Amino acid sequence: MYRNHTKVVEIGDRKIGGGNPILIQSMTNTRTEDVEATVQQILALEAAGCEIVRCTVPTLEAAEALKEIKKRIHIPLVADIHFDYKMAIAAMENGADKIRINPGNIGSIEKIKAVVDVAKEKNIPIRVGVNSGSLEKELVEKYQGVTAEGLVESALDKVKIIEDLGYDNLVISIKSSDVMMCVKAHELLAKQTNYPLHVGITEAGTLYSGNIKSAIGLGIILYQGIGDTIRVSLTGDPVEEIKSAKRILKTLNLRKGGIEVVSCPTCGRTKIDLIGLANQVETMVQEFPLDIKVAVMGCVVNGPGEAKEADIGIAGGKGEGLLIKKGEIVKKVPESELLSVLREELANWK
Image 1 (cartoon, rainbow, N blue to C red):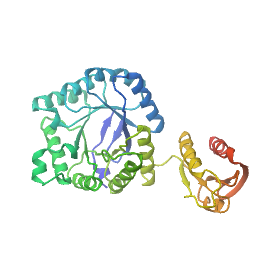
Image 2: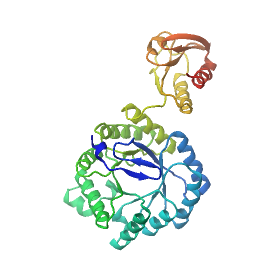
Image 3: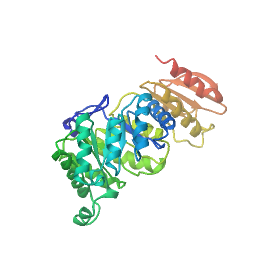
Image 4: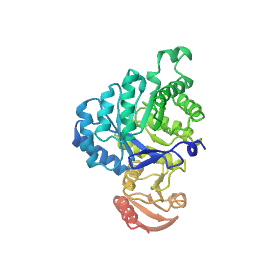
């Protein structure tokens, strides 16, 4: 497995690579200069299970805000830099645990060296990020378009620039909105480097399309043992990215813990708002640090039988429903109480 062969990189008090657990990341969509809004969003991300968070640093004010943000959060903070090398330096001076740059966008070798020198002095890891949308013109021409091979060559070229400056505390990310190109690029890259890889499908889209593209892309990549930290990129509330990432890792048996909700697809026998109820249950169970399976079934005919593999479940009837444990009916309750009864059971789970 490639994951066991990647080098270990420390990001704040967390470690990725070397077979360590795959960590979940997200990125704030607040103005980083707005300390209060950014802190509140990060705390919400933490509560959802985010383990590393990234903030954009487009201004000196944003870089300086990192110092105050860091005091009020509990997970490592990554500064995202696009063009100005001075922002990268300022971010590190204000406590960033890691910086994300594309050396190709930073400018001259002198500017890149200035960033690397500070990172080296403070032993701050650098994530070298390359996106298909910004692939160099010469590589597009060489490979007759944007290709997986071009992405890999671009990333390794950028890594070599930093290695030649005497630094190797690095993480690599190569992202594309083309799922299968992204998969192929990671397969190629994993054979050519032992740096830990940050994996994601960039610009994946809305909750609907983004979740499907991310689940397929990350699923194929991670199943091959490639990837040390992930982000599910969605156009929406960043908390949704964490929920999706946790589900992807759990589905692949790469993470234990967390309640798994299973629910039936509804049919003509359904007499309750099963769709609404299932969504409420899925949100509610995030509160409980349990490693169990919860079933939400739409009818009392097949509900008990279908819920047998679950640790606990509810099944709705007309105006009422059943509480089921290990396929056995425990009690009947009014439909309006199903959610609260389930919550009480989970709160007292032993």
